[in-house]
Length: 182
Image (tube, rainbow, N blue to C red; front, side, top):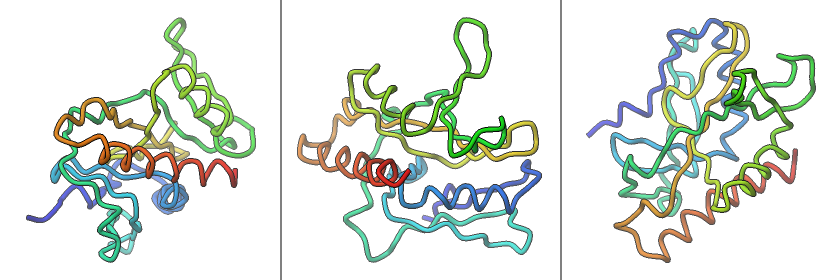
């Protein structure tokens, strides 16, 4: 069965090359979830498959079967309302973590590393970010942003404790590697 969710369509994105470059920055730090085949990919590459960058292929590394996690129920992957955005969108440097305030609807931003650590502390449970097809968007039709989903290990009822620790450890290790460089 072909995994159509591994082909990302950038139809509504105006600055496609900019969006592709932005997304490729996260190949080494974020895992990809495909609900169509119930898998999480920790080792993959992103390739434009059309000349105009309107379609991308998220290709799992065929030599890294240990980095493909099977039987991940869609109910274990939930939306967060958190976005990664380039700081230049609002005149800042680096990458930012943003979300809408529940109180007034205004955009709240913080440096990405600091924001991810804060989210993890506030949750009191592991924050395991993953991205899915359709998470790459544009802010104000100008700058790419990336919505984050998160994997909730407690919802992986068909997995052993060992498997859950392995999945959790892999996702955390990818993010930690990125945060150490940021």
